[in-house]
Length: 314
Image (cartoon, rainbow, N blue to C red):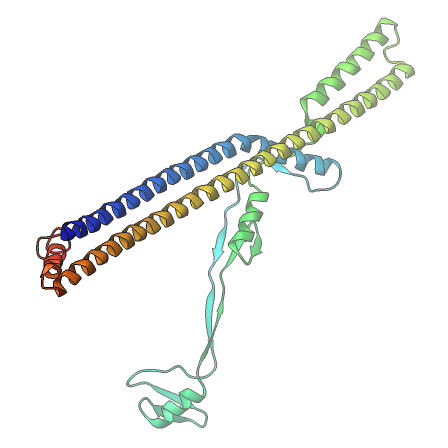
C-alpha cells in the first residue's frame, strides 16, 4: 500500500506538472493572438489617418509660406536619389610589417631585411598608421555626413513635383475675379459708361475687394485643412498609445503565464517529491524493523521499465 501510494504521488506530480505547462502554453498563445490583433488594428488606423495627415501637412506648408514663415513648398514628385560617396583609407608614416623576403629602407640608405632583429625593432618603433574617412552622401548637390540626414533632405525636396502657386493659382480666385469684373462691365454697359473713369475705378476697387475677400477665405480654408491634419496626427498618436498599452498588457500576460506555469510545475514536483520522500521514510522505517519494503519502493520508482526507469519517463 505504501509503495503504491508513493508511485501514485509521483505520477500525480507528473500529471500536475504537465497540466501547468499546458495551461501556461494556452495562456501564452491567447496573449500572442491579442498582440497580433492590437498590431493589426494599429496599422489599419494609421492607414486611415495617413491621407488626412498628409493633406494637413501640405496645407500647413502652404500657410507658413503665405504668412512669410516658410519656404515655398513643392507638392508631388518623388524623393531625390541618394548617392553614397565611399570612404577612403590613407596610410601615412612609418613602415608596414611585411612577410618573408620583404625589406625596408631606413634613413641613411640602409636596408633592413625581414627576420632580422633590426627589422623588427624599426617596424615596432615606427609603425605605419591608417586614417579612414567615413562614407558621405550626396543629394541634389548637397553633401551629408549620414544617410538619415540625406534621406530627410531628399524627402523634403522632392524632384519632379509642382511648386506651390499660391492663392492666385486657385480656380476659386480666378472664377470669383472673372465673375465680379463681368458683373461690373455688364452694369456699366447697361448705363452706357463701359469705359468711363468711374467704371475703371469700380473695376479696380471690385477686383481688390474680391481678391481680398477670397484670399481671407483661402487662408481660413488652409487653416482648417491644417487643423484637420493636426487632428489626424493626434488620432494616430492616440492609436499608437493604445497599441503600446495593449501590447504591454499582452506581453505582461505572456510573462505572467510563463511564470505561473513554471511555478505550477515546481510546486507540483515539490509536493510529489515531498510525499514520495515521506512514503520512502515510512517504508524505510518498516525495513529497519525487518522488512525490505524500502528496496521494493526504490525498484517500483526507479527500476527499469517503471516510472523513472527505462522508457516510462520519456
